[in-house]
Image (cartoon, rainbow, N blue to C red; front, side, top):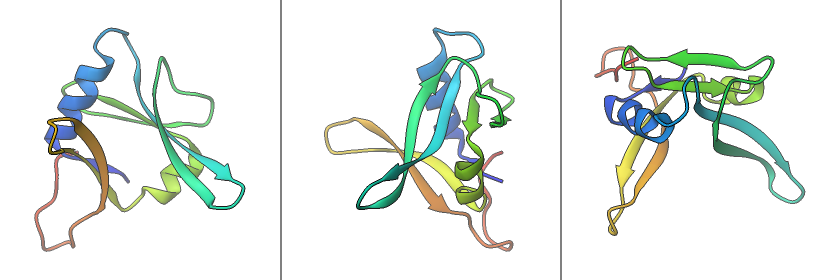
Length: 103
């Protein structure tokens, strides 16, 4: 199951604070020449078949079935670039004996 860091959960909460029950939605979109690509959007509600993840702080993530499969062993984090912009990053989860992010 996709895990998320506390920083990612806070960023999702900030992005979706204006709309009750909204969340960050991951989906897989087919690209003609590049195969499949992961797409990220703010959604008012999950779509039929979406897996819904939530945190105690209220952050919600909606995973389209193909995206849920792809992200099953990943961690969602947020990183700041040189201009101060926040960007979501998907990383491999740490091994069982390593540090685990918040769920």
